[in-house]
Length: 639
Image (cartoon, rainbow, N blue to C red; front, side):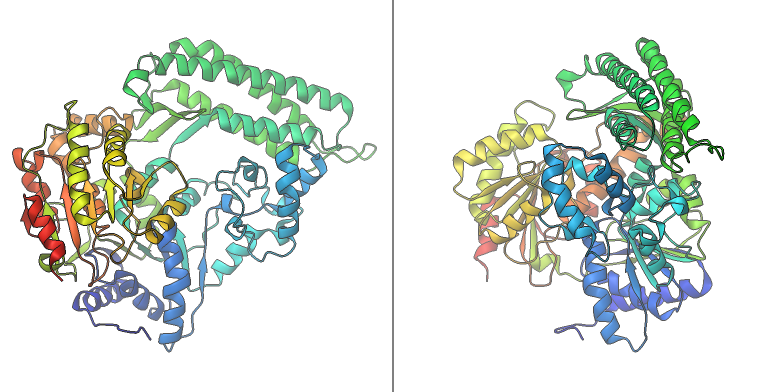
């Protein structure tokens, strides 16, 4: 069924191990090097098992590849009928009830006038309600949040549009499917709201495959915490305001609600202003996006926080009164919206109070600044018990796979981070011939990456490499500061098209890179993984520094403290292994096919000057190491 398909021993080995695990139960950790074909290696035994299997991916790209490419291939190739469903997070789907409310509310804003008619027309024809169908809808359109089917606003089976609901239909399809394809974000979000009777989306499964499993810890950390932001409060106030103005309650109650919202908005602005002043003033020079907070550092915000909590209490109480059943003599009260909105106010208030205590040793507390957004968060320091409860304890059989799971030749690091006590393991080498397909260039003279001279030196080295590769490169950075230094030098010295992260959406940049000959992409963390460019368009990957997580980052800092508290050595046990896995992902962008050829380059001199550099070198693809730019030029002269 696949033109040019070649049997691969590693793929067959992995498929057999997955099949045996599905029969016997337990956990399998499978590192499958690039080119193994791991997706088919787990999909075939999953289908043949005749069990419902949950497949979770780290990226939407892989999720789409499985559903739109691999599943149709296997439906044609296997003599076994089966069905599959592709599930995204709730916020990707239109909520018909919220759309009805918006129509009644007559927002009047220009953005409503432009996009509301488009969405209303689309809502009458779409089968899925997936916003991805609206290709002309901007990715960052704030208006979408007003009509999205979020868990926080869901009314469950009390909703008047429950039977028509796109999330309900999606779940019904999934419950009747053999293969259910989700991503880690949905997997974790679903588990985080499982205690909500209407929050669960993913149907029960006893067999699971976690692909790109190296991402699971970070994504679980995002979802199993608490967060209160100025955006969340603005959205909540807007929803309450729309309910009040929808013409379903009397003028006296509208006035009461509006007074409560005025107080809420005023105290929210005051609280987030105090929070920003207390935690950003001393860190602005360092450009920190996330700043750790303590009970002491929150002292100056407590009065503003108390007023904000009181405003939430008032709005909650007002809405709760409206939600009470009406007597026979009275007009029926609006039956769903007040109760849901009152509950949301109470949830926000309770989470705010938890955050303000900043005292649970299992969590790290911090403030995150993103553009105009201020996010007050608490994240779990150790997610291993959470992941166990979410996944391993609920499943008969779980496969965790990725191209990068091992450090120093073993699975100890990933087992420790995810709390996996007992597991079968297999390490399958890459099917690619790195000794022939690639070289690793390590420059001999580079300053210490922490010195002020590194940025300009990196810029000159990047220019010298790209002249020899004729562009066709990803240049991956660990910081925006070095990216900007290199960008300034490269744009002056090179004639090749240069694309820079942040100037356009990620998908658009990748499309431009693929379609533009001899182009160069300068990017940071989001391009280190989950990006595939096959062929000559990508012939070089340059990494500026070893990707150590900043010890100033609140979550990294808390995990370093946790390792130290149990008597461990954080640098060797946590920071180096995490950086090794990240570097493997970045360099893994280069060789994606047996015909690909190219140059890997790492500019960080610590690979050769520090003892821990040997651990990095041992984990890198087995390509010949060169230190002379002439060798780079000679590599491309070989046909």
